[in-house]
Length: 118
Image 1 (cartoon, rainbow, N blue to C red):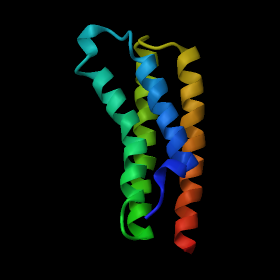
Image 2 (image 1 turned 90 degrees about the vertical axis):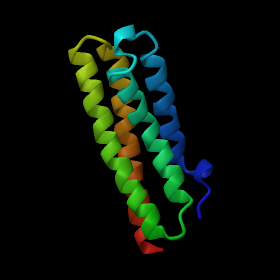
Image 3 (image 1 turned 60 degrees about the vertical axis):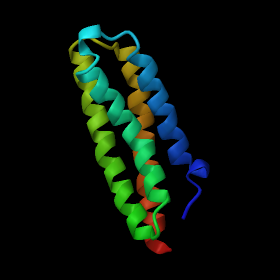
Image 4 (image 1 turned 180 degrees about the vertical axis):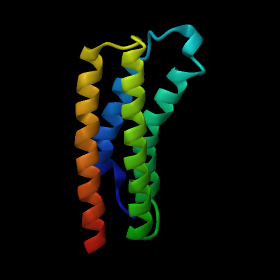
């Protein structure tokens, strides 16, 4: 088992989740159960899967959850692009979140590789 709180990738994923929640505070009320909800669930999925994987018994299981994190990161990117196209979020808000997602994706990949060695 790993201490997920000490993992930089988890810390960054938590930051992204916070950014996404703050960015979506003023979305249209009619989107509350639609795109807003999906966007937030995708954001929460990343740190949640890192946490769940860290709590598993083997590194192989942990790597599997990190694979889910990669997929969720791509999903979150797509939702950001869609939100921007629908003019529900500005480029200025999207850009730093996308940058953070890219960084977490790289960190996640490095963590996956390190788990293969141990």
